[in-house]
Image (cartoon, rainbow, N blue to C red; front, side):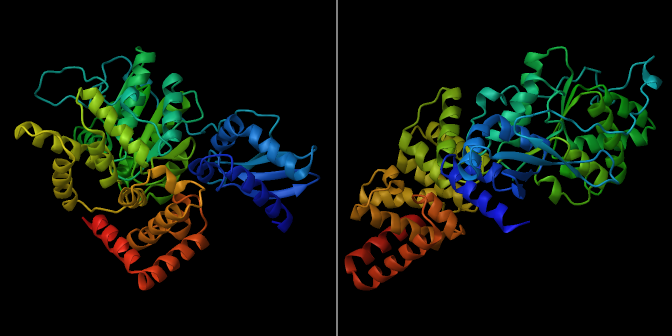
Length: 478
């Protein structure tokens, strides 16, 4: 890699960074590697076919303008797209695409499907039926309330939601097959995959959609071995049009189960059936998985759900209250969104606790009641002070609107509040200096260091300022 192409691409990134949201920049531009620069043609390497298509769909105008600015009117951009080969023994290869010739390509697996002719003349047993009970046909096992209407979109989940919606419009025929959604617990993976299944059922009532937890799949396979009907088990799953498997990491280390799922996966994929999977880790971090299975997980799209920002958390709470027909003071909603930042499920649990306390004790829902309930709730979980919460406390203390802390104004009181927010963010969070600066007016790490030094100096020399710092610190620890 020559120095020249790196310099050109770095200059391009500076322009791009100023024109799109930070999260979009981090997702779509940080993974790009400049490969070569020849005769005003810059070649960049992107991780997948889907990545290339997304850039062409959403950022092509910005890319063209940036390239022409750096390389002149004859400047052009080409992509080097890393493609997974269909054989587990072959290494990934790359294909070059110019920006003017966009073509959709898909890798076709070469593994032959299991023969289905064996079971066609008789009914295939349904593994969801419990022996001894009435044989009622099991439907999709989807939860109606987990719909797209109830799924709040934000920067934290936009990619996964957009891919899920595209799948529901055209299952099995998009570049997102399989779709693997991964995140920590409580961030909405299960909700999203249910929403995909429900929307497919709405659009295509004739299609067979099935949601299954991976541990349930494993237990069904064990039962099929015990009853000597593995072929029936495989045939049942091969008839599904949209298979949704939750927590796929639970087949790690189970070689026989992985082998069965491998054949089911191949058959469904080759027949343009849709697979949707969830995991608590990205494919590269899944341990105990066969390489051939991991390579297939990478055929489509692996999309992560990140921790929602403040606005998204507030929107989630408001949406839940609206759906339940409940009114709650905005200051209570805001306090709850500030207090629980890393787990949507816990945040909704705290909301239910407040509502239950209010109803059972016939008390009005007030900020004081919310603080009592949330403090108890948070003590039983790990409370983490967020940068958002710190900014809120600092602004409330000085009576400033929250948005001013990120403004470009140089008014003394606002600069001081911003410096205090940076100081407490460094003290109470594990965030890097760059991350703190990004959240506090899009400043760099040097500005954050300067702010911390300034606050420390004032604490030592200004009694009034020292009182500010002590009182704000107490409020943060409440």
